[in-house]
Length: 541
Image (cartoon, rainbow, N blue to C red; front, top):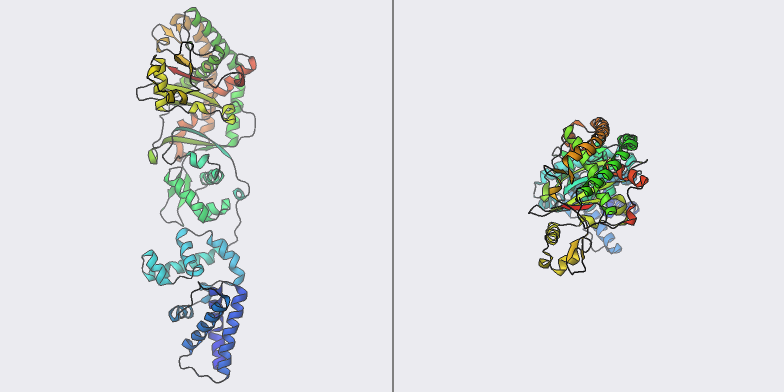
């Protein structure tokens, strides 16, 4: 075998891949490797007999590459030294070190699907051209470990490139889910930062949807959502830390993630809404009869159940929503569905959450509830409807502990102890009287209205005679409805999340919206737009 033949057999391919690795461009690699080979073959043809053939070949390659760098004016390029060239020459399989040009797209795709550990190693070695010694020093691990990991990373890369990858449905048709929440947020604003932040809530929601249906690895989530892992990992890791996801396993490439709360399907929601519609026709007339009769009995007894601070038309909303909740909570107790708020979370949070798939169909007005409490026990209860939220009228959720304390000071006649700044902050909750004093703008219950002799401001004997029979009929209808919902829910909540069942039962089957919609149709309630923002707000003293 001639020296020319020996060079072509042993070095020609390695020289090409060396050039491809250093230039990063197929055409430049072809030109540069052609120049190097031409110089080597020309010298051999002229009779040059190098003593150390391999070192001589790589010296010519280095010199030619240096000239190429100078010609291209690539000042930041690294010129390989003898050690680095020897590493290239010593590769058992050069194709493992540098990929074929036609595989570049597949390589980029698979790099985006590798876990961080393997991806960063391959990028450091092949893209950034770092030496093994440099990588080992950066990661503070032995060079042998880097070589082992690099070999494993190559295998994973090649294995993925041999597979046909098809992005999942969520990559082009993301789903929507709504959330029912309770409790106080964590310091980093979890769970709202994942579920309601417009910047990336769709990504987080669909991670949770997919991980709820199928325990998934990071790579599986990446393929299903069509999002490269460098962008996906942060969301998944953060949600696992904040307990929205559960991580099973410790190895990054094999660990699976599962959604750590219940997501109710749209069909289940439809069934429960349909059942609620079935009882509405019987329930609403009973509710109206109860509220009208109660009002007559309260006034006859000289009791204003919600004080003198609110117009009765606005009080009707509070009384209606209170009645719906009283009926529902009574059935919860009878069916042993009590719920202890709220699960303690990292970062000082205490909250629970449940998802409901987007539901297309008839629906009742959504009515949420929140409250502000002060350390001494004062409390402001607030209802808010979806119409208020849509209009941005969510100020009823703004009561902090300090706000509640101030409002109760005003109720006690101590407004002179309240600063102007505090009064301005509560402009939606207080008003100034002609006498120059301040009073609240919402309903106020008296604890005395529920006692041994009174129930909701009505003498007990009158209540038992005229209101209790109506109330029991409402309870029977509510029990029928909640029993149906319980059956549906038990088919929706997986065994691993059954501890959350009672919370789920408190989150979807609401009587509030059904009663409100029905009483709006009868004319008992005036539409929201005709009333103030204080509808559904009250306190008890």
